[in-house]
Image 1 (cartoon, rainbow, N blue to C red):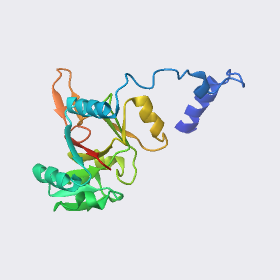
Image 2: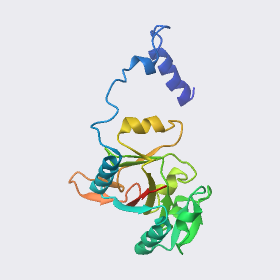
Image 3: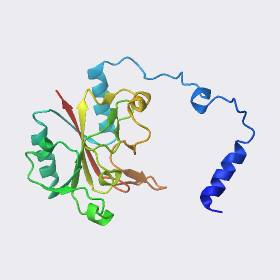
Image 4: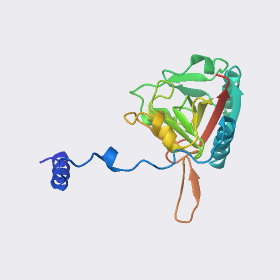
Amino acid sequence: MSSRERILGRVRRALADVPADDPPYEDAVPRDYLRRHGDLDVPGTVELLAGNLADYRALVHRTDAAGLPALIARLLDGRGSQTVLVPPGLDAGWLAESRVRRVADRPEDSPYELDRVDSVVTGCAVAVAETGTIVLDGSGDQGRRRITLVPDHHVCVVRVPDQVVASVPEAFGRLDPRRPLTWISGPSATSDIELDRVEGVHGPRTLEVVLVSGE
C-alpha cells in the first residue's frame, strides 16, 4: 500500500459518519465577516499600501507609465546589476532604457544558475493595502515562483489603482486558487531564538515595489 492510499484511507474513515445531506464546506462555514475595514478612498488605500510596504522594509517608488522604463533602469544601475531575469510575458517596454543583460527564464535552469542572476523584474496579480502584501500568481509577467525566490533583488511593478485592494478578502476575490500563489510581505527575513534578524534566507534580500499610476 502506498502512502497516498494510506492517507486517502484515513480520510475516508474520518468521513464515514458524515450524513449524505451534510452541507458542503463552502456553505457550512459562515462568510459574514467584514470584507474591508474603514472607508478609505482610492488615494488613501494606495497611501496605506505604500506605508505598510515601507514598514516591511520594502523600497517603494512611484512613477507614471511614461517614466517606468527610466525608473527601472535607474534601479538596476543603482544595484549594480549586470544581469536581470525577465519573465516571458513581461512588457518589453519596461526594460527599454536598461542596458543590463537580460536572462530568459528557462525550465532547465538550476537554482545555482538562477542564484547567479543579479535581479528580476516582474509584474504582480494584486497588492493588499492593509497588510502591505504583494501577490504573484505565475502569470506571464510574473513567471514561475522560483525566479522571484532565488535572485537576491526583486523589482515588482504594481499598477495603481487597478491592482490595489484594501483587504485580504478583497484580494481572494480577484485570485484564482488553482494558480501558484506567492504572497510577499517585504524582503525575505527570519530570526533565530535570540531575535537576530537575517534577510535573504528564503527569498530576495531586497524588494523594490514600483507603484505605476496613469495606466
